[in-house]
Amino acid sequence: MKIAFCLYKYFPYGGLQRDFLRIATECQARGHSIQVFVLSWQGEKPEGFDIRLIATKGFSSPARYRHFYREVGAELVSNPADVVVGFNKMPGLDIYYAADPCYAYKARHLRSKAYRLTSRYRHFSRYEAAVFGADADADGNGHGEDSATEILMISEQQQPLFQQYYGTPEQRFHLLPPGIDKSRCAPPNRESVRREFRQEFALQENQQLLLLIGSGFKTKGLDRILLAMQSLPEAVLANTRLFVIGQDDPKQFQREAKKLGIAEQVQFFSGRDDVPRFLQGADLLVHPAYSENTGTVLLEALVAGLPVLTTANCGYAHFIEESGGGRVIDSPYQQSKFDRALQELIMADTRSLSEHALAWAKTADIYSLSERATDLIERLMPAWRAG
Image (cartoon, rainbow, N blue to C red; front, side, top):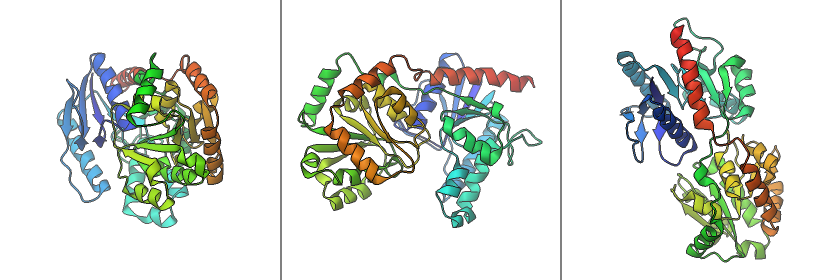
């Protein structure tokens, strides 16, 4: 098959982007030809991928996305693909990989009523409806508020929300297991990796290193972490550091850390390729996200043997409870609960949490996302074309 993948932006350190690359690579390994449409591509280009960069036009994101959709549509009319797989919501997709949460729910519960009068809202709500609408248009392309798009779900908790707002038929949803990169698993020499890492960053063995990984520091709850650190007893805070890794502008949070008097305890890093070393060198992954469809980094921490402190609104938070490898703050979020939990975990012996996480990771089905997604792409496509 010739498979066309559509996503607005590719960069090496985004969760959606890494999932796309693993799925596309698996498809290629099975003999399919890969075409990719993007507005921008950062990093190395995989050998054999036909990557088409769509020229950016428009002053706003919605305008640029509409231009992208029109240009891709024109390309596919003149040079059709057997199946079109999207990693962002847009019309005309055969398959959508649901990495993002329900926009309709967020717009109604996390935004003001005035927001729903904006052109931005009209754009994103229309593009979401083009994927999740109940039935196909008369032309079968899903260009209106109805759709025939098959949906690859990675968060079970989001499906009822899409069905609530769009009436999407059950049979169009296909739940995938997580797709954790086994390079994140604890290596046999994990103790020496940890020792060398902590020597490199001048960390004493009794110092506690907190770790936040993820692009979009606000969404991931970095402000909540800074407040919790500031609430620590003085002696505990003096012995605690936070490393923040991700593709985002840190200036706002650097100012906040300075205002709270903890700037010396916080260090920022851009996205990087040696994340497994950080997972071994840290003592606790902190991830009090405001909204998180899945939270792949939570599972990456577990398979590395790193205890996790997160919030219940992360799609993968239930794995933390199942594994016994950390603690989950219930919804609705209360800062005081997170503050207490952070202090308790910093001051506790967390070796048992690490052992539980490692034992669970040996048998859990959390590694096969790309294989299962490719199975579905191969299984679903012939049925449409035969019809």
